[in-house]
Length: 579
Image (cartoon, rainbow, N blue to C red; front, side):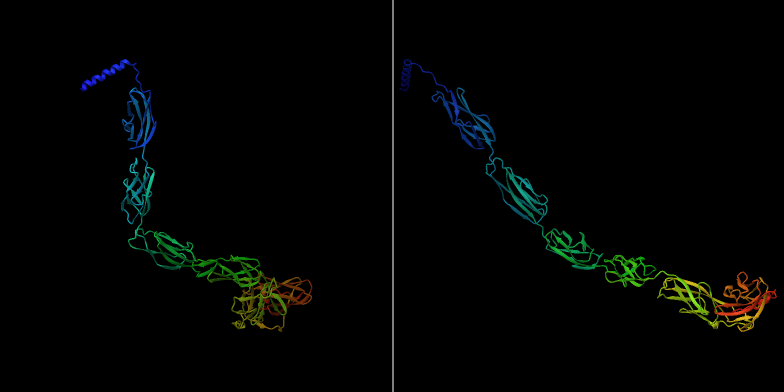
């Protein structure tokens, strides 16, 4: 029955088609897509819709393909699925070859955030560990790789898996990075801190130059970092090195500190005194100036040599006599005496005695004999035992207030003040013939207060009086008269007595002169043979010959010019005189 029906239908259709005009088949002329490009993330999908032209095309069958199925796939219905990062082209094709395409781009799924299981972590030992765990969102983020980093590996390191290991004391930051996002964990490694520092000694006194060492005790004993920093609050007073060695360098008070990294500090109070001067000395302790304006540079030395304050203060007892500068330069300002004092900081002193004298010379040493003033510097003084002579020194400045000292080198002649005394007790003759009547001589020195001095000789006979013919005689004894030819000469010796030679008597001790007016002759000394020579003139007449020694004077004889000539000198020798 069914088979019959089918045959009947086919026959009917055949009849109809044969009876009507045959129409052409419509083909697909174009295919378009609703999207020409699409951007997806891995796992995402996008539905593409194809439109066929003409709409009444006979065969609308379409085929979907992907140029890179590892990036994106497409179903028979045009559903695109993102597989992996990259680019692909989805093509839809009709049976007659009409196509349309859609560019597919598959992008990453970005990281939205990253968090750590700890944002800060404290440690108290080196070598401790801690595991950090990073959580990356979203879960489907394309790349969830985490990078780990430490800001200070000397404090803490971090492994690729986020394992923290402490390596030292201090602070570090651990950073986890993923997809441009970061998360951090602050790491602190704190050692057991120093809580106290005690210094020994806690105080110290000394003088500049002293040194000592401070010992530090740090608590607690198990403190990890016991490093101390040493310091001085005033390095001009005391310095300290890294081992606590202290040196005192200046006067004052200072604190030496030892400071731990924890801030704990120990203090030693130090007091430094100066090194005091124990002694002051000067290069010159006395000086005599002889002219105004003269200078002397005084130099002061102090002991000990390393005394702290070596400044010297200079002063004078009389600035009208001598001034002194701050540098110790002394200047003669006037005549007199003054004392220059050098004083140290702590009152130690040294002095220099200054005398300023005029520069003068002793020009004369006067004395008076028989009312006549004589100068001992021009001729020696001759005198006899028991006599006293007063000396009057004279200086070229005619100054007052100048003192003199008179000394003698003889025990027979003594000096007391300005008076010379000739000792009579020492002048007794030793025999009846007076042969020991010798001269005693002395050198007299007159020294002025300025140090200038002069010397002269004094002769004193050991007996007083004249002798004629071997016997002492007086001035009243009769005189012997001698004769001399006109213009003739005669000699006599005063240095001989009874033929004995007393040659220590100087010939110039005697002054022999012709007395009477007019003088018919002259008298002179002959130093060659210690005699006096009488030289007659051409006229006849008589004169007295007078001898003087010191304060003694006596007429020796008379001489007549033109009388009988005395031929023998021996006749005169017996008529000599001796003191």
